[in-house]
Image 1: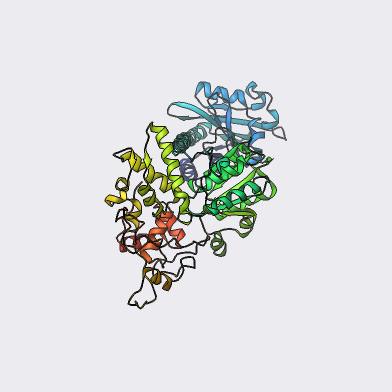
Image 2 (image 1 turned 90 degrees about the horizontal axis):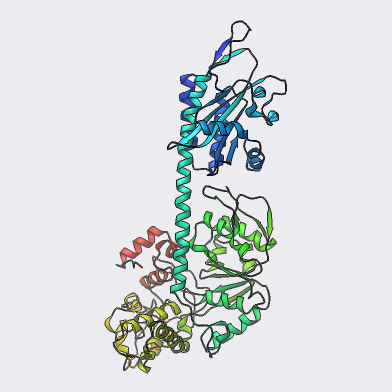
Amino acid sequence: MTHPEMPHSEIPHPMSRGTSPEVALIGVYEISKILTAARRLEVTLANVVNILSSMLQMRHGMIVILDKEGEPDMVATTGWTPEMAGQIRARVPQKAIDQIVATQTPLVVQDVAADPLFEGHEDLFVSPDAATVSFIGVPIKAEGHVMGTLSIDRIWDGTARFRFDEDVRFLSMVANLVGQTVRLHELVASDRDRLIAQTHRLEKALKEEQTPVERKTTEAGSAIGIIGDSPLVKRLIATAQVVARSNTTVLLRGESGTGKELFARAIHELSPRKAKPFVKVNCAALPEAVLESELFGHEKGAFTGAINMRQGRFELAHGGTLFLDEIGEISPAFQAKLLRVLQEGEFERVGGNRTLKVDVRLVCATNKNLEEAVAKGEFRADLYYRIHVVPLLLPPLRERPGDIPKLARSVLDRFNKENKQELVLSAAAIEVLRRCYFPGNVRELENCVRRTATLAHDSVITPHDFACDSGQCLSAVLWKGSAPKHTLPVTPAPAASHAAAAQAAPPASGPLAPAPVVPVPLSPVPLTPFPAAAAGPVEGLPVTCPGTEACPALPGRPNEKEQLLQAMERSGWVQAKAARLLNLTPRQIGYALRKHGIDIKRF
């Protein structure tokens, strides 16, 4: 039942009260500022109710947002806090809400104690001093659809005459603004869910396309799918087999493309947890807000778009292994949250207050110099000591050239099976691969073999089939004309050989001297110098191959351009990440790229 105004009081000279146009204008302005602020929808709606309470003669205010079934999904009241959200949702006057939604018109009740719509909610509306409590409710609409209600209640002691028509008009304007804001949040949440689902589909498709090295072979390391007979690889396999027997945290370190994820999966499959899940997370691929939800999960309504409860990766990996790739890229704020999980084995979902305990074996990986990051305050020292329990240093491919033939043949075998072909590598082709620098390590070797096999003219791959024979190899393009330059003058002897010149330069495994413009941080893994190539092209090899004298694997000190190219290659040609590697700003990286005439590669 709707009453435009209360009957006149018997008390003489009653005062007429209502929302004046000036108050309404100020209220709409203040509420519009709140609705456009970047906050959670629940907090925004609660702030709207608080503004109303300061401008209207009211006792309580309530905004109810309904779900698709018409049930209260979100309730905001005066003095709302996340802890009391569940209690308030259970005390909503459902009959009154249903009438407003069904009629799509305002509802004004003079005395809630005498109205059957509020039966069962007397404790919520009845005044302690038995005064008359009135109720005003208006629908919240957007695009002609009712999505909730906005209501207030006030005590009428008979000393004033309220103009309900003015209050209803003002509340209807506010409800219209709230409806547009709720609709906008729903659209943003829908787009966010769609983008997250699309990202997950693309990540899954990408992982399926990038076939890993076969794990079951008759060669050394076949039990864990790692191919290689070099002493470095054998030592790593033996260590992984020992480490896998315990639940100790492992930190895998090495350059991009050295097989850190493969070793992480190998540790899991060699451990007693192999029957449990192996869950992977790339910490550098997600923003901090999304990463927290991905790892810890979230409760329904924890943030805009959280329409359902979702388990995090820690819960999904319970009893198994969680692999955190690129852990050096997480922010200091998130490092503190992660530290607690590693120390106590417990956490709370985003938006939740229930503590969950998990049993997870953690394997981390990074190609970042964590020691330098700790010294600069970019990485927490306590988190460093927590994850740096058993470090495994994965060598780059240039330090184990003896494994290149076996890796190349394995990649070609998988290519033949996938494409039903019978290609083979000639001895000269194997020698070309052995002498390549491969800054992208095993990943670049696989791409090189697949590209060459795809474009090969015959069933036997020869040196002339490689892209470096025509000057189109990625390594050749990156490193051509970047031969090492010595910073110290070297006096040539009459019969000075190339090896003698190499001895005059500082060893490649020592710390790199800072370049004039682009400083390079020290590598966490000392590099063993690659065997020097003979002076002049090798018979049967393409003259443009990176394995010739121009290859920077030869001993020497990298110059400024080489350091910049190395950082860009390690970062996948992402300027912001390269700037972090070189301790520079993205703007300085852009200036250095233009200075040296380096074109940005698009992938």
